[in-house]
Length: 232
Image 1 (tube, helix red, strand yellow):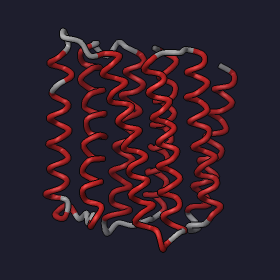
Image 2 (cartoon, rainbow, N blue to C red):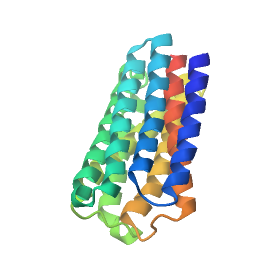
Image 3 (cartoon, rainbow, N blue to C red):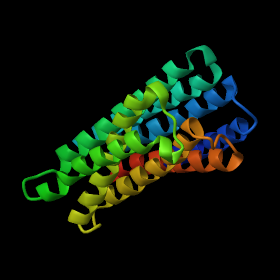
Image 4 (cartoon, one colour):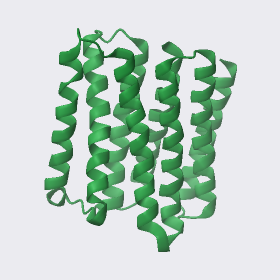
C-alpha cells in the first residue's frame, strides 16, 4: 500500500507540474510531464493488480495502458501541427479501446441472467447519446469535421461505460466498493471529456479554468479507476 501512496503523490506532483507548464502554452516539456503523470496512474493500476489479481483488474489495467497512449497522441497533436488530425484520431482511438476494456471487463465480472435488465439498457442509452451528439453536435457548438465518426463511436463507448457503471451500482445497492470507485471515476471521465470537447471542437478554447478542470477531473478519474482494482 505504501507503493500506491507514493505513486499517488507522484501522480499529483507531475499532474500539477504539467498543468502549470501547459498554462504557459504547448511544448515538448508539457507532453513529457503529461506522460510521466500517465506512467504513474498505469503504475498504480499495475501495483494494485499485483496486490489483488483478478480478471476485471486485468481489463482495467489494459484500459489504463490505452489511456496513457491516448494521452501521448493528444499531447503530440499540439506540437506536431503537420499531423494534428492523425494524432487526434489516434488519441481518440487509444481512449476508445481503453473504454472497450472497461465495458467488457465489467460485463465479464458482473453480468448475469439475474441482472440482465441492468446490463442491457446501457447499450441502448449509449447508442442514443452517440446519435444525439452526432446529429445535434453543431447546434451544441461542436464541429468535429472528419473526426465525427470516430467521435461518435467514442461517445458511445464512454456513455455505455458510465451508464453501465450506474446501473450495476443500482443493482448492487451502491454497496460494492469496486463499483462505487469505478462509477465515480468513469463519471469524472465523462465530465473531463465534456470539457475537452469544448476545448478541441468548440469555440471555447483553452482558458486556464478549462485546462485545470479538464485535467483535475481526468487524473482523479484515472486514479479512482486504478484504486478500484484493490477491492475486487
